[in-house]
Image (cartoon, rainbow, N blue to C red; front, side):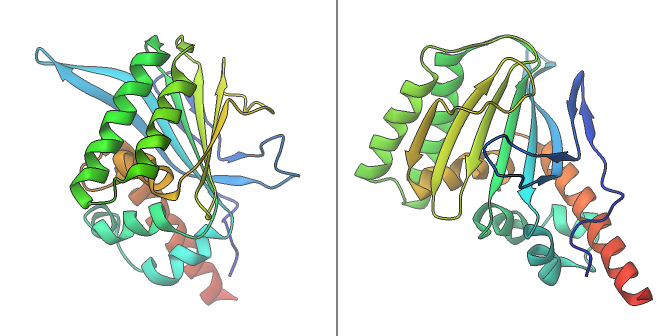
Length: 227
């Protein structure tokens, strides 16, 4: 089967552009493909305030891996399947998560909020131990000196072996030098779990992933049947 259809498009979230394909400077030419992108916000005093746009990029081999199990499913079926999103979270391939700011956020506050969400989830599922506590402290320290004006980005690079590499950029450009590296598979997966898992902070991102991947699986399947 074709791995990724040529029709893959980017996504616009507010003023933020998430291109269909990104090639990080340190990847030796390897490309990552946009699974989906959506806004994260909170309802404050009855008004929905948009804080960030989040995009999830997948290594090319993720598409046939996911399609082998999920092709033929509708957007609605994927959106309502915990297992589908769990397969993305725990899939044995590399992922890049880009979180770009719509409103200015202080690094210390942002890092603390993400850390709190991760700790809450890990404690709920019984995966929070001494190693995870140390990883969380390292995570908070990486964000402590940062400030994120509108348009700036946080990049999380997740490897299948559990390495979480964090980078910061003033725009959507992936930097060559990371701000920090954390060796903890549980925390690495939990960062994405809080975004697209059962209690996701970005329902819009989940909808985008379900919609786009359902369409891509169908397009690939239709093309393969013609060949």
